[in-house]
Length: 464
Image (cartoon, rainbow, N blue to C red; front, side, top):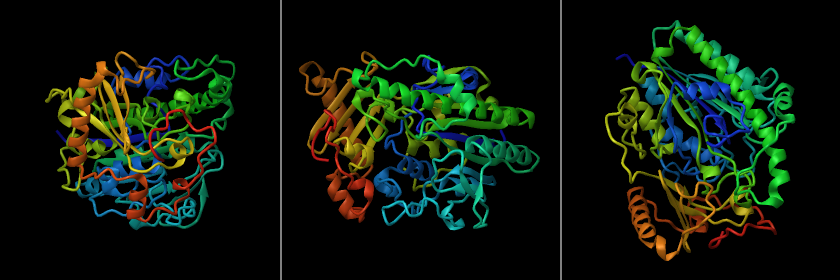
């Protein structure tokens, strides 16, 4: 079988629960729902360090945070690993990147390079480039093209313009002799939530927004208002995805194109009385993951409950494309499970690794943590000791913390032993957050020193 084209599309801050096919009645996602009906749905895909930069560093290196070094937002990825795009390029692929990058970083810790030109040597093997470090003004969105330092602006809503450009890239690449590896990185539905184009805001304007049962009443009004805009962005992205599918089909390459749709992390939106990301609950860590590759698996809906984490993406994509996996990769190759050649391990677990408390975690009084997300359980501890344990099959909204309860002691002991095994395997000493910051020289980063809000969460466990 010839190596497939790869189209990897990912949104920013879109949680796994926010689609029609996942059962969310708020979501207007007809294209995603149709794609799910013709794809493999990895139902337990996870972002083990659920923040923008750490996820992206793991995606590009196949490594965990303490190995790739990006465990605070805006730390530059300066890696000796073989990066994903370079490995594809060395295997004969044309490589292209469009959209938000967020890996060049800001060494001063104050976001000074978010609007900077990303030089070619910092693009990790992507030869075609229409990218920008970080921007969330979606209707006035800059980018740099190729090696030019001239600032350009996407026309209108950036996700739409980026998608049109990706469609042109797909059509042009389909006429070439080499397979392509194209990444399209959308910045929505990350906040600000009410900046989607008017047509999609109107679609959600009068819709009754239902809340998850773990959103407390005092958060309800705020959560509904934010979610209305969040779902408007998602509806816009759904239409963008439709444009991409039409381009792939129109170019006659659908059978031989491995298409992935996913996200870098989720968003709490008031669940557990929390906002934003960073947190170890499912609204923050679980992400959508659809994979369509008709030549390999046809166009039938299929579900797979493997705990696919960000470091696993690089080896799994390479495995599916029959490209050797570099020795620098720490993640697991799940391509045999996807092909149906290996039965999923019931004890397989995504490693949750947030080495220091920063950003939304710190501001809400939550500690750094390590943990596991299996197909059934969530287990989390801080340096002070065990913190969270949920049976997600029995308690899908994570309302009953079983940590320390006698009836759950055997499960907790087994998960603790498994966690310790994973920490040893990844060379994670699990120091305090302060020590990790000091050793890495990151104590000056704004997000690592932001104040803790006076109304910090009841979920605090150990020192932040």
